[in-house]
Amino acid sequence: MIGLFDSSILGIENLSYVFPGEEKEKSIFQHVSLDVKPGEFVSIIGSSGSGKSTLFRLIAGLLEPTSGQIWINGQLSDKRLGKVGYMPQKDLLLPWRTVIDNVSLPLELTKENKKQKLTEIKEWLSRFGLSGYENAYPHELSGGMKQRVAFLRTMMTGKELLLLDEPFGALDSLTKRNMHSWLLELWGELQKTVLFITHDLEEAILLSDRIYLLPGRNKPFIQEVNVDLPRPRNSELIYQSEFIGMRKELEWLIRDER
Amino acid sequence: MMKGKVKKWASDYGLFLLVILALLSIWEWVVEKGFIPSFILPSPTAIWKSLVENEQILLQVHLPATLEEVLIGFFLSIIGGVFLGVAMHFSRILEKILYPFLVISQTIPLIAISPIFIMWFGYSIWSKIAVTILTAFFPIVVSTYDGLKAGGNEYQELLLTMGANRFHIFKKVQIPMALPNFLSGLKMSVVYCVVGATIGEWLGASEGLGYFSRRMSGNLQADAVFAAIFLLSLLGIVLFLIISLLEKLLLKNKLR
Image 1 (cartoon, each protein chain N blue to C red):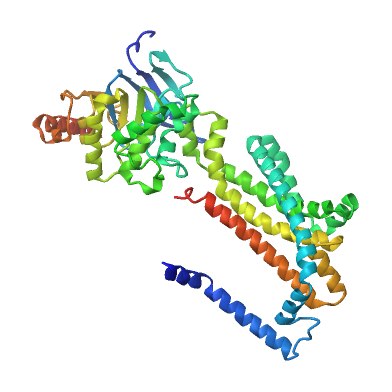
Image 2 (image 1 turned 180 degrees about the vertical axis):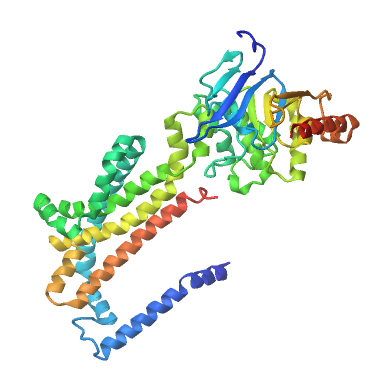
């Protein structure tokens, strides 16, 4: 087993999670294995109730697996809190903090010098299209901006692996489209590894290098799909025949799953 | 802009002022016509006259004395209440031990325990402050404790994934989230302080609005009693408004 995930930033082996209930225990998922290499953008798709968010909470260290192992940076990790950047479904911006104070929150928790990083944060804010909003409060921002602030805050944890749980799920389709273009443009310079939950197939294909389909009722195993579309990409890609072909294949796989 | 403000003010308080005015007029009329003898219910104008007559002693001796008891009692209640609330938040054992005592402390009839305080602390200011604290610290403990418990679980989890420890979470999530609750507690507490100080003074004091009103009731000077009550109520309202203002300033951006 040792050395299995040496080159992976995240390795998951035979992971099962059973929800501990008082009367009957509920199995959320069983025997999930996957790995993520540094610099990859990997999406996870699954029907609702397939335990996508639970998987993230396990990786982030908020839950302990019933069985199986989680490797981070090639090391078997028991204490995972603080090792990956986790962006939950809701933006969870602290309403009493301004944009810049929300973004620098992770720096306050480590002993990093916040003042030194301030110029870096300001630069990122402008690249995230948030300059001029440094001192705004979350309730003054649009949905898309809130997500960008939350995303930037996740990046500021300084962790290489970012877990993004449906970050664009609550946005309207136009805003979502803009966020895709923005993220694709930015992806080259981010130098991060992303594990991304979505139920939007188009989004998954457009953004990802690989896609995992979580086990469903009829297919008790995890499936993996490679997305061989060249980078850099832009959101026009969705009209090309290769893309449509991928989408058909994926839809077929999912339909088969039900 | 100005016009809009006046309009809003009028719609907020206009009805209340109208009713007050009507009540005062009826009151004045009833007493003036002799339906109720003035030693039982003095007319508003008689109360006002007594207020003006006793202005010097009321505003320079008795009001400051009561205010001092209220402020010291309030201050000590805040210190003690916050300390207990935080301690109970951090220790389940302390919570289990202290909570019943807190509730019991509020079931003791104040009038009954006040003579004991006078036995302990004499006629000094401390017997009055003790009664004040007994009435005022409870809302502070409860609001601090409940405020710190008030949810924010998702925020706490988020901070945990960033590697936060318990102290971080307390400082960056729980304290800000407890603030609205805590300030509500303060508002209640400051009003109770006035009640507590007055009761303390009734049972043994040499100055203060409570003492003054008791002495005047002994003299059957109902108008002076009402004048003191008017000032006490005004004191409570002003203190309440000060805390409300503080609340507005602090919570300006805390509520979505």
